[in-house]
Image (spheres, rainbow, N blue to C red):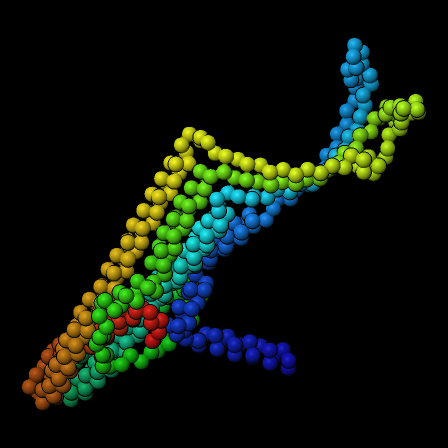
Length: 448
């Protein structure tokens, strides 16, 4: 019984997952979290974080220990003769050195690295924005294709009614067989249009799945969002949107951070003109052992002096040292001066990149504003055309019912009305996307 319940619960969970419909916000959040390009740039950001930590660690002293052992065998020169010199030696040292002065190189390096960290974070935000806009456009394309499916379904229903009516009138002999054939052909065309619309929905869902980089796509679907039939015009000016975009868009902030990073790098390079003062301290000791004898000499009383053990020699030979080292650059072939010129060129490159980013944002905002205005006018025109073709279809139906027009006229009117409905849907979603894009540059998050 327990096993049966487990299976039922598992199937229920699968059914719930299969029925899940994704909202635009869920799609954007998932893509900006799991997209491989985002993950790759997050690793780059972590590399910059580590570079910053390394730069800050340079304030600390460097401490090192050394332990050495050596052994030698053979004769050693002594006057005109030689003596046996088999020896084992051991030494241990502990030293520390610290940078005392270098014209602020460490502080300037830290500041430069902080700007690099800022820029890498803004790079991540830029990629997330690009992905979010792609997701939003494809999401709205999917909703448009679903809307066209509804229009095609309505057209099929009308064609089916037309066919049923023609079938009855033909069977009783009031209309010719050609009327039934045309009605049947019209129904077949509408069914074909419906099938094409359904395939387009599947194609747009598949494209959205690929943007999300999901493994499975067959059960993927999006929420059915009710788009208002009447859309209001956009009232913000380009200058208002641009002011917000220049302040908030991450690609511009990244360019600003890279300008400051290049300027800081110039200051770091200039420190090579200045002296460097380094302090060092150390302690150490050593031990020697004559392998062929343990006698090292004779004292003043002519008594033999024997080698002391390891710890005794380490105590006797213990020593300390301290030093200050001043390195004054005098001439390095003019390389530092050239490196400073390179850094200034990098500053100019960063400033040009900044202007390019601003130009790109300005062009995108202006295009979005143009599209908003143009698409709204197209939308209003499409509404008027839909109204006119709907009236023409109603007249065609009534005229056909009264015997004053043919089924061909009805089919033409129905096709015109279906095309007008499709144009309204297309213009509505085009306007909606351009409006969302303009709002996005205004600092408003993407949502439906």
